[in-house]
Length: 229
Image 1 (cartoon, rainbow, N blue to C red):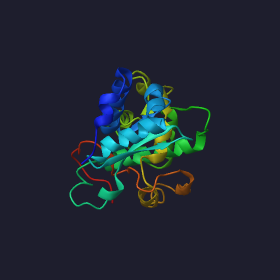
Image 2 (image 1 turned 45 degrees about the vertical axis):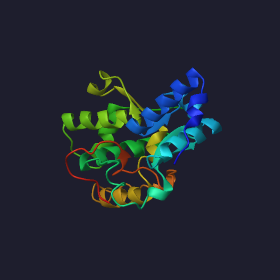
Image 3 (image 1 turned 90 degrees about the vertical axis):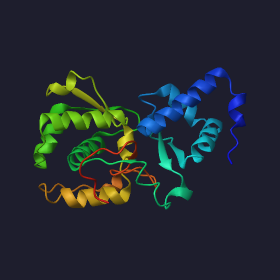
Image 4 (image 1 turned 120 degrees about the vertical axis):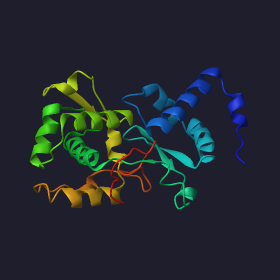
């Protein structure tokens, strides 16, 4: 049984940040330095990361910190990856329309990413890329997908901006980790050839071996079509 006695020895400020990190990870999978610098600084410290992993391990999770991209992410604990009944219950499953838009946003991030500079695109950039791949979504479907992506700290925007073609959306490096490499290859193979043919190398992104996936951000399970396995 896990020993949580270390929590009793925490200073009030550390205990507060510890709880916030746990809750943020369980709710939105990622802690991104560009969005939550204070939480990222706390969780990226080796001692704090160890304590958080002790706590998360009791419920079958772990946190992985990607220092270069400054992203902390919730993943399933190695010993529970193949445990029947745990994996699927803990995953948020994007529907097919969300996956297509996610692929578009991910490709825009790869085109513009830099390790030092933040990545911004406009609503028009996203719509142009959707048109290139013949992805037809209603305004309501697009707004719904944006809300999901924002909840999981994949993008950020002001609500007024997403109604305008020149509205600005920030893309976070967590986009690199929201689909594992196997799922990413499958999505590209399924959609890119069919949707008019620009070649994209899924190997460009860095993905953890057992990362969260397009079928798979921890969270509640929405209704609708599941992502391809």
